[in-house]
Length: 486
Image 1 (cartoon, one colour):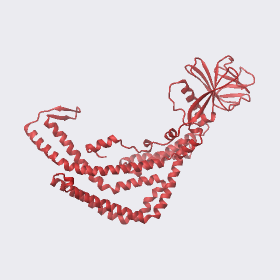
Image 2 (tube, helix red, strand yellow):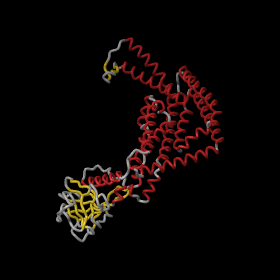
Image 3 (cartoon, helix red, strand yellow):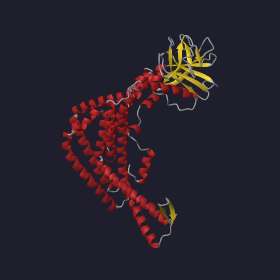
Image 4 (cartoon, rainbow, N blue to C red):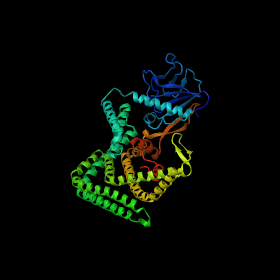
């Protein structure tokens, strides 16, 4: 449609009224198969530096030069470079829709159609930003302060990377920095900014409501927490007693099994002492634990994640011991198996080479392989049980993270814009022919809103932006079967 040879396109706002003499503001572009004149102001101005033509009753050559147009006011007659015989295609577009759209400029297809739409939208957006004063203000200094805080969090990341509340605060600071930066540069309330503000307001309301509910049921929450923690520790001790016997009829190494069981019992007993010590303090620090909810319910969820981490720390320690022992035995068996087949690992060339071993080496290797092989079932049993506990803990973390992300990105504002067909989320151009009584070719471009799913996907944050990078299922399975820590 827009690719005819030497085709001249004139993009005109639908509300453009050449009702007086003056300059036409816009710009000119010479593309490979067409020439385009873009009118970027719906009003005729008396003076401007970036004009591409003139409107008036009579054509005067004093105002016209190369690559300029003339529109006779009160009509749709257009002349290009004093030539009244040019074949011109008039393209009418919704000025406010193109100016407010936050969806365009994403089409990188190398077509004239995509080029024209992108050129027009970029210029309109640039004109919109030029109307604002970019001198340093309070937003600028707030951004500078947030940069310093971000650098501080970056220094503390190695120490605090396992803390959910630290990660959440870091993500909130980055979001606030992005919000202030966009607001300072564009001075406009884009759909993404509006959705971020709306979601945060809902988050704060839910956080305050949660505080009131917890204060009303304070005694019940504390008593239930103590009861659940005691039941969990008691059941864990009974599980260890069962594993130290002959679980499901397994013939395990008695000495090794008994030693591991007593070692893990020691950790559980120490943890019971810790819980009994913390019980009187829980009532005193209950309100302190609820204070992060003033920053939003998502912040309180991050606190819950850290509480779960602390409450299951003894299980995590046992899991680490079992995983390290299981991994060590696996690597030992793999290494000694290479000894039987006359191979050895060459880390310098990252390959397995042939090797001849002496009788003493083969004898010692056989003893070591036999020892590790017969001890492996006992280790595997403990590793399997506590790896299952670790997986359950990770699933609870993932569930809380999903809930936190949903609350932080509730697309209520986007849904409202979509319902009212706002031009700010319009970005699907539709072309239609305008019937005329003369030989002029006229086309109208309309911007239709994106689908609800596309709008939500485009104007909400993803996991990478919030700092929540979840491991893939394949990575978890690989770590599970190789004894690597999850």
